[in-house]
Image (cartoon, rainbow, N blue to C red; front, side, top):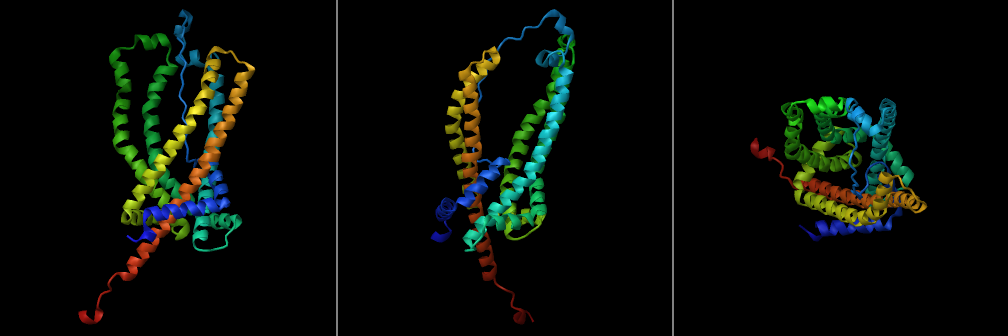
Length: 337
């Protein structure tokens, strides 16, 4: 492999392009708003308190102890919030695909020496929005299947634990409780052995399919077939980019989680003890600002670089494929005759 197509060269070139074009930063931040953040801040701090159950509450379901006696009203509110969340997921899915397409188009234009503006990139990506959404839906299929299996498995367990009176749950035979959890015990290894690897592979192909859709103007399924062929032919670069970007996000996520945890711990204690003070309210405001900065600002910046790197790699894959096609031997028709 020549130096001009080595992974280190392509990585460095993607970095130089991204650093010198602030418009790509803007698109990266916009993509983070719709779920494409390159950093995941994870804080997990629990303060446990024993649940005191009075004798009269034994005839009530567990959900009444968690949400109060008017838990039906809370369920209506949660259902309404669920519909709002679903609407946001659909909108962010479409808008995220549009922004990602614009980012790919912008990087392509820069690499090919075009004088491309944000407006032109958005316009070109919008012309491919139907195919881009199709690419996203295909990429989401494994996660949707996993989600459906999980809901189908967990729903009967939650129904048993949350909506049955506590005294009935206490009188259930041990074998009946084990039978209720048996599907979950079978589902977990199935998801780990099949579901997770499938989601990883399709996720990587989804990255290539987005670029095939924008750069080569292919349809949804054709984009995946094209991405699979190019990425298989350039497996080394594909694996290197996947691992490197994963560790970049992991390291930044670990570093940025520490300050978030320091702000969250006193807030978690105040929620449990219902002892709010002005300093804790300030903590909560600072935590919200910090998470917004990390997930949207820093996460968007990293996501924008990742998209730039993948686009640079895809264009290299495409150039090598076309060069190989030109060098392929043609059949000697005259000799065959």
